Image (cartoon, rainbow, N blue to C red):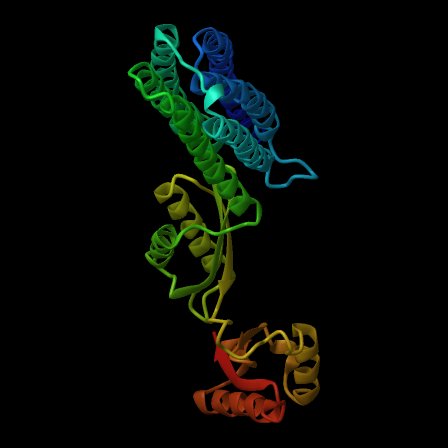
Length: 386
């Protein structure tokens, strides 16, 4: 048991180190590009390149958020966080989305202001064009590297940061076109390119923020994923049906809760074994499913009469013993109660040697049934000799 816990802890630590490494690499590249874009944007008179540089500066803040979230999100479960700390990454993803929205708004307002003030329009040159080209190549390479790590670790936070890098590459393409167009004699194109960059940043911010918010409010999986999970549950031998299937995300992991219906006379141990196979199949067939809570039902309690209003076992037994006082109670080996369809079905186990012949056994069984039939909650009494 301790070995398993240590192995899980080591994996979480290794994952964190990988997340930190890819984020630090991105942060260094973002810092160099941000400085180059702003400086050469000013020197080369390109508003869109300066806007792209500010975008890269915002990446540094997002990289810091990713580092902090990855550190705390990689921690295992504790008394205060029994499901782990993966939601730290989710919260950081939401914060990253909001940050991008703010950056996009600032860039757009400045670009629109310049469009309505022709005298303030900048005229970029070849130097700005070269820097934009370098940015495209650098950010596209960084996207592929970061996405490779995100897929291996199944991390939505690192995947979000990868798409952030891709958005930078695309925005730099727009900047490149804007600068080239302005150099060709279209003075408005650089400012229009800056607006295009801001719209792309806002789109990425919306996607990240909306996805993070949906996870924080425990939005379930989409219908196709839910259908696949339901199919896996129903395919397990011993499962008659299922209901109350619920899912939610915890970072890159999926948590599943479900009620499965097994045979009404299935033993507790067999029902538990069926639920174990449900859990095993879900984990084997659905990569992101990590936590499964299976509730075992002898019937579909979503449509059947409730049994929670019925008397508990000790009170049922006391009432039956009172009615069976004249019968050989000391010989009863076991009384099984089955709470089904709002009633109690009773099984009484008696030793075969208690009756001398079949007729005497039948009379004794009829006596147990007859004396219990006036109990309102009892649906049926069966006497078994063995």
